[in-house]
Length: 275
Image 1 (cartoon, rainbow, N blue to C red):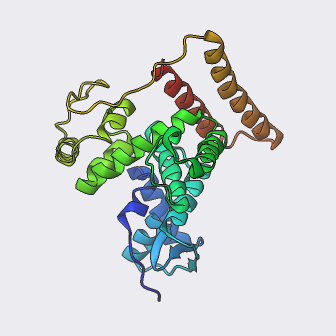
Image 2 (cartoon, one colour):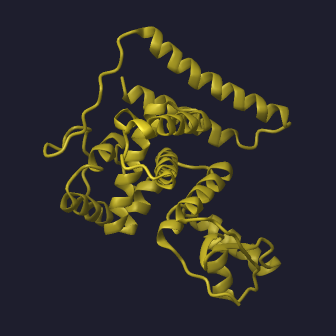
């Protein structure tokens, strides 16, 4: 049997199952066997971590499917797309996935600029503008939210380098930390990020308000005063929500309505925070 390796970055992209759900999955696998194949890339498990853990524990046979991808970034995008389409995600997980998707896409294209499309070199500006716009349309959020999510995901990954438990707590919502704080944290010195990670993991983290970190602050352009622009932004988000909801109705069911609501609420919250 092919040897399987667990990659922590891939594993952290998967929401942690609660005790009851995990035990139900375990009972099902023991009774019926593992019917769904595990998916691997270059020996790394990229789908089926809970099933693999349970099957290994109880010596349950399983099937492996090997997928080919040009690079690690393509794997990340594949995992993100899988999770976004079938999981109930927290608002923080949604931001992390969207930001990670943007960063992976950016790395595939070889950008040297980390976030802001405005400052791209002229030969790359067209691509990166279209990338942020494309992802904004895909996830039904604003282009600015995509770029802010990139900072959030960068901070979460930086925290994960010090403590995987702290990263898990942020993504699962076990710790109350503001997205705007994470945006700022993405530019903090390494030692301060490590300190924050340790505080989160140990349960001693004290919630901060955006801008409370005096050593590093992220400058944010003031929102426009024209109420018509806010009306257009809200209309775009709402129209996108209704469009997707009508597709669900056309399919004759409400499967996917809950994550759709979460995405809609998250987009409105992002817009509210930018006011």
